[in-house]
Length: 403
Image 1 (cartoon, helix red, strand yellow):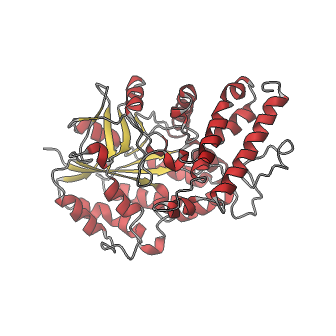
Image 2 (cartoon, helix red, strand yellow):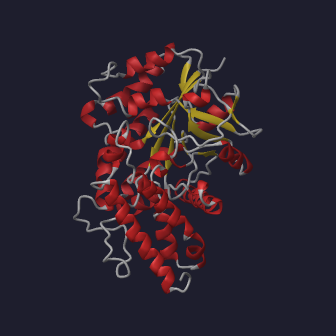
Image 3 (cartoon, helix red, strand yellow):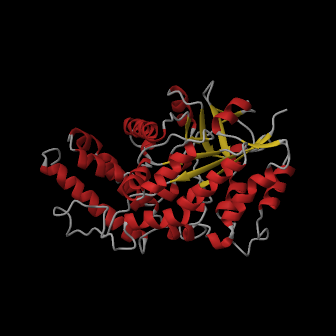
């Protein structure tokens, strides 16, 4: 009988946010992302703040846990755009990630370099970005990812088939109840239309207890301790594995240190591993250990976000649809320009965060969208973005690639 396992997966990402870019800047200044470093909202300052509050203390603690508990393992994903920013502005953070991977008990998932939704708009661009990310992970960490995580955990049957065709052993998705039906996310599955690749589904209820509810004093389970949480998992039967997927920034940024989040993480291995039938697993260890219980059919795209678990957080209104459609329509002239600056700007403008900031779902989920946005409103996000788009288009006109 296999041990019951926690598969802990942390996702690290920060976009290049579009600065206050006005119509008067178009045609004159092509700097869409960088602001004065003295500005607390500049991309560099955001990286420095998140590094101090989250990345550095979390990595320090994870390294201590890896040294203290031989059975402790953790899985990561780090976007290419974040890796670039760490290389430029926080090399000590990059080094701390490299030290974690060097333990041999930390895996990194594959994904799009620019944290884009390219799979749904431009398959060739998607494949290029996944390859860029694989190359960067190999360069910085010496690893070749075997598990795929698409941007925003956006998954459907077509992506599962694509991943198998491109040699991945596993793929990650949201364990969304309407898809699962009577089934549990605490087992391994097979994507519909595939033969060999396996599907690992996020247990969103348990993950969100940590990522979103941990510091909520109105929550009936507050305070959440590592002992209580481990007991919940122990009493959950039947179950083989608990896929706890969350943002890296859960630790120290979304859930502040004074809420006790680092203490929770520190004591989780201690309480979970008290039972000799409990363990932690890397992605590949789980793939080697567990066989698919059933086939999962996701004909429609499922994501991690909001009560609908679809793409409407990024594509649900006309602003978002206009912005992303306009940007991908530039693909052919952008790539044919052979201008590396234009190509890089175009790809940075594909990052899904830009469209998330334009979300107008102000009811059940609006507070979440507002928390993550650097803009005063979705309309401000849209205006800055479209001004950058018009300038990018102007640069292509200047090259004779558009009329």
